[in-house]
Length: 476
Image (cartoon, rainbow, N blue to C red; front, side, top):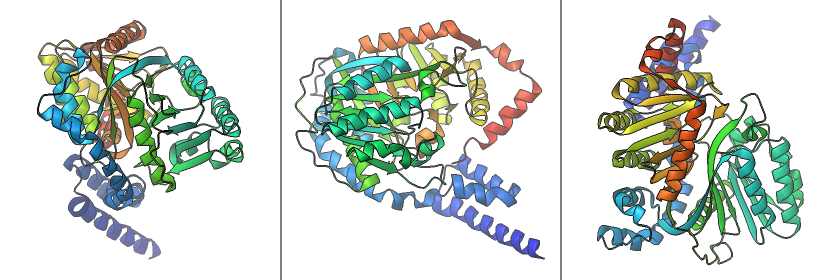
């Protein structure tokens, strides 16, 4: 009798959640159908899964403060917006001109101001990237702002915290923002940062609930003295140095010196305010005068559940559609929606050299098998796909014609497009683009191509794993 009562309660809860999914949340139809299947075909656990992964209906209330904060950016972009509309804006680097429409679209949808005269340095190896980050930290004179999804309590994590604590003891303002779930999963916690807080540094915890897998702060950015910034795919942990079960870690990040750092600083200000309620004042110490010594135009594009549209995905689409020669993508997770799949397929059918590089082994098996199924859909259209065999590839990049592209934290999946807070740097410069293209082609030497013949020859066991993983890939 008690079992019947429990099952009855579960049934009522599942019906309630189904009503919320259809009439309140107004999810994407594919995601809605997937959730309805879970609720009605797995009733004992469906409502538990929904409590952990679902419940998007509260996000407008949860992130109202962030959305209000983000409005302060609008005034900054009004003049550039007007100039782009009137076609009077003249780019310092002519490489940006063919992408005027992309620049304008990102400005419109995300208030992603275009900054020029940036110096951009590319890192694809963890040791080189962290050497540069440590050097920037040691040279800090006024403030250090770090925002990462994962900060592990391991050798690299402790070294970063120790370096930050040393600067805090020197009187430098240090603020460290991390995601509660990501850092807890990586072995970190508030207790791991005592050395920093005891030295006078501050920590912020983004979205302290660790029981919700959605709405995580997946960004990876650093700002030093308002003049140097880092953005990319590297978190802070030993595995990002190639120490661990995944082997060599192939990732991508860039170091920026120039006005784009202002946009990284603003992004940090808004996220820090949301997480800690401390409102930082936009003074000259945080936004010092910067003499642009580079030639790279850069937009910083942010996405998340607090944005009306999907600006990072839309930026990817605009870049793909602008391609005339090549589209090269690197991503650990490839679960595109129909719009992205169609854009890649049409680009390949138009004669563009479209290539996608994914890992040869999974860190998340469910996502890995779903990735292979979506890769398989594109092969017949001429898209070429490769598995990276020299360890694990974690880079989240696209490069178009060797002239423009994006580096950041956003994977090519529905979680990054709709559910996590992400940040990417979009650049328009053939010098950076050609270097990214060269490194992609260098990576091809340690890859295996997934040909249509090879894909069709996969075993029934693999086909079953793909089918099940793909079925539940829209959940969220």
